[in-house]
Amino acid sequence: MATETVIQGTVTRDGQPQGGAYVRLLDSSGEFTAEVVTSATGAFRFFARPGSWTLRALASGDATADAKVDAQQGQVTETAIAL
Picture (cartoon, rainbow, N blue to C red):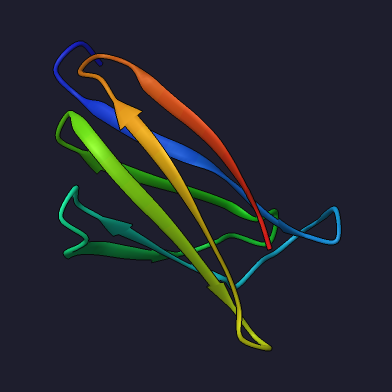
């Protein structure tokens, strides 16, 4: 774990886990880097380099929300995104 940077969290809508949402990882300039689909419990995880990132969650009904995170090497960065 000391050499990895992990960004993980959950996506919710109306207080409930949002399974099947897409979460995009955007770098500090806003460029697309990666995308994952949330689990049934709304969970997602990225392995990334240290730095500033934007997480963008997208779900049905044009629901979107962003969260900014600062990931540090050797740490797990947790975030919650509410649609």
